Each structure stands twice: as C-alpha cells, then as structure tokens.
Image 1 (cartoon, helix red, strand yellow):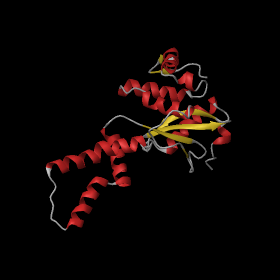
Image 2: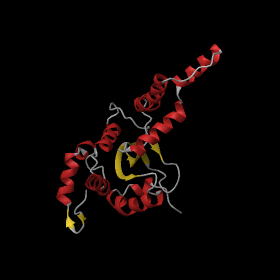
Image 3: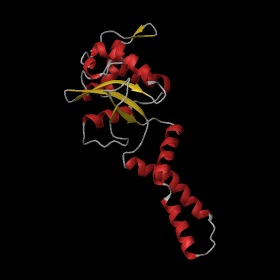
Image 4: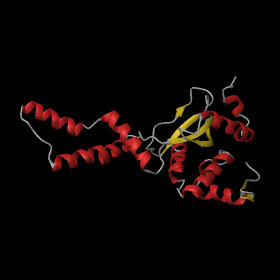
Length: 208
C-alpha cells in the first residue's frame, strides 16, 4: 500500500509495517488502511506511551459485528468538509475523558437513587438529612454506577476513527479529535489518503 515512510529523517518503513502486523491491523483490514492511519497509531504510542488497543478494539468491532463496542454507534458526517465519510468513537485514557463521559451520563440519566430518596422524604412529610452512608451511595452512583451503565449501553464518547465505506468494506483513513479541525483532517485526507485510495474522489463531497 505504501512504499517508504521517513520519520525524523529515518526510514521507518519496515518498522511501521511490522507495527501494523503486531497490532492486528493487517489481519483485520488488509490493504484497507492508509499510511497516515498507521503512522498516527505508531506516533501516538511513541509520544504518549498509550497502547493502540482501544482503537483496535473499535476497528475489530467495525469489522466483526459480533464484537461489542462500548462507544457510540458509527455515524456519517453530514456536513462539509468531511461529508461522505464516517466516524467511530474510541476511548482515550485519562481523567478528562472519564470526566466527560460521567458528565454526559449525569445529564442523560441523573441520579435515580438520590431522586428516589428525595421522593420518599417528601412523601413522608418528615425532615430528613443525608448521612455518611447516603453520601457514599450517591458518590458511587454518580461515578461507578454511572460509568458502568454508560459503558454497558455502548454510549461512551471519545475521539474519532475516520473511515470511508466502499463496496461494503471499511477503509481506515485517519484519527481525529474534536479539536483537530475538520478542515485540517480533510486536507490530510486529500493529500495522503486520496492518492492511496482513488475511489475517495467519488465519496468525498466537493469543497466548492
């Protein structure tokens, strides 16, 4: 698919090809991933020390419908400049990602246990106060139960795997974030991915 890859002036072609083999990319999507995608995975691991396993778990879920995904279902971009492509969320490690998912869960589901306690107190007509055990239960519901509920329902959010669907198969183009900018992603896709997968010209919506 790609011939030579140089990083920092060094030829990393064989190393990155071996990396794609080790993480299972060649097995799951042979000849269906861009050089940009595998380079991003490789550099992300080197720079952050984070394993690509969470991303590969989502690739496997996209390739094998029997595999369960913890993140939101795939969605198609409906606006320029990425219109015509698809994205799938993948989990990222760190407190910021956990906090975002917990906040989303609280907005969606609230705290049913606390709501029930309030309802019971109002129904009794008694003045009640939260004790130490009540506070511990509320904290558990807000964090542990909330996270498990969202994970089990496949509602977790994260960053993006950007891909194209062509003749019923997925072609993995790049990784994106909510802050990377759609225009920049389209620029990289046009310059790197389109030459590798010419059919993208018929999938990507014209910019003007």
